[in-house]
Length: 411
Image 1 (cartoon, rainbow, N blue to C red):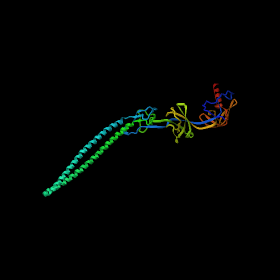
Image 2 (cartoon, rainbow, N blue to C red):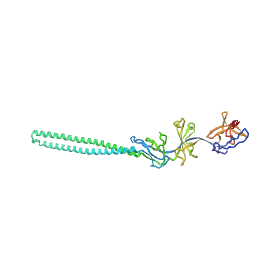
Image 3 (spheres, one colour):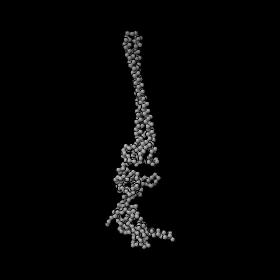
Image 4 (cartoon, rainbow, N blue to C red):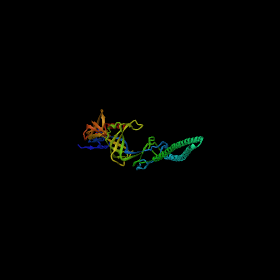
């Protein structure tokens, strides 16, 4: 038995026009043949890159104000690593830098002044301490000579020695206290200087972050704002950490499509797929199903229709394959060799059972059939017909009824 593989359109069939008796009005027919039958489901979606870099809005301190876009790369433009993609308003940050520099200069001047004053005061305390040491030494010498003096003079010398010792101890304590006070003051001023330096460093780092460059080469795809649902543009405000631009790697693409609740049971991982771009309907690519969502989601916020996301990785690379393009994917559900199949339009129902109208002589008679798998155009006939049978593409009775109605209308 010879095998045939047919890709018929609704009217692209083996057809002929039968001009016979009144019982068989002229109509198109289909000759039953045996060939390879494929059953597919068609799902739609968009192209994405399998791998993609995401450029995020920088995370900056709230005190630097909002992230307002002042420059944005052209959507869809080819960029190289290091190219400027987006720039945010620098006004508040530059103002913070100028203020931080002024405060840093003031803090540095205060520290230098405090160090100078501390050195001068400590020097004075050290001189006082040295004077007290000398006075105590003199008092000691006088007391040593008191043996040759009157008792009252000796008592006075003892008192002077004791007084000199007290003053020496007091001068020592004052020197230590002065140093401690100045050390604490210097520590505070150093901390203030460090804080002002940290503010300046943070502002300068933030300034650099406001110019975002490409982390890799690719096509710049501007993301949509979750508020406006439109792609970001100049003067838009962005929250820190939000995606602004995608940089897809175009060496491998995937179609992210949606299957209905009825269709999802026929979708399997590793299932073969034919991918067609809406923009290039005459070009078909091959691919395979790689991911199937476990949970359904609403097709849109306003819709109650549930769909499952399905990922089809496209084989090879072609310049026509670009992110965001609308695609149709035919997923191969079943393939039958040596199958008899007829156009779906040729099948009608009589007494609750499927029939086709087979040519018998110059007319057509209903022929019960057992049907199997089907696709968008054809259905497999498991029994009831033989290869070479000629059947009507539509129910002849329907045409007769229409002709009768037209005849009545012309009377």
